[in-house]
Length: 269
Ligand code: ADP
View 1 (cartoon, rainbow, N blue to C red):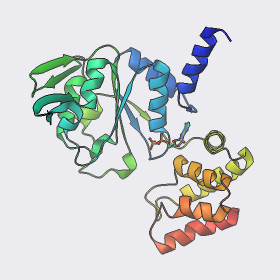
View 2 (view 1 turned 30 degrees about the vertical axis):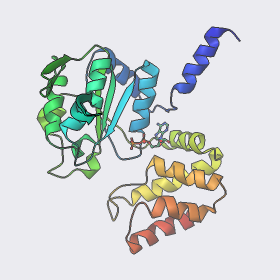
View 3 (view 1 turned 180 degrees about the horizontal axis):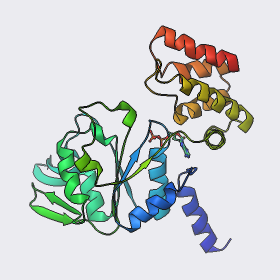
């Protein structure tokens, strides 16, 4: 085998599988080339994180992913002085590393983070593309191959946890949702190894379970959970047990809601 094809195969293998649904790959690539920050909106488990890892690998850029939570502060992103071997040393956080080294910094569920995180995002998301590090006295200018990507789930939002217009309007934004049935079937089949016809039945079932969202359920069953379900079935678990453990229990603690979901499952399997 010629060397060049070995290299091509190797890099293909390193790109995580992502099945595109629309023009999201082209949009990401353009945003990267034009040095624009990107905001991804959508329910949990619909492929946002996989999309970002796929694109980072395709563009050949390092990816710095941070899952935001309500204790996450700006210092967790920028860095801090740490005591190491009796010496105090500055250690870059993931955002600073992406700015210094070039790469994509992905802040997942950014609305969860503390308010001071927006303070570091603002100068990075306008045309100055700057990261001031007060503690070290540095003012870092982001290189051309730095990109900030953030995501959030509009479904969870409440008044105290939403992105302010002054922050949202700094981003190119795209909405994600669960993929169309045939695409979702292919994703579930590819991820789990379960035959496509069985995956199609699971995807149909998901559609009826998703219709129950809003009545008693906060969120519809995700593509991630369908992959879990198919994986358990493929491993030999009885279908109804797999469905209960992946499509019912993770969604609700309420006995009536669970019963409603199980009825829909029993009507299919
Ligand atoms: P999110 O970040 O939106 O919460 P993830 O990207 O972690 O969701 O997706 C959850 C799982 O669903 C992935 O690990 C993958 O197995 C599967 N998945 C969802 N959408 C896609 C897609 N378009 N292509 C490939 N896999 C997908």
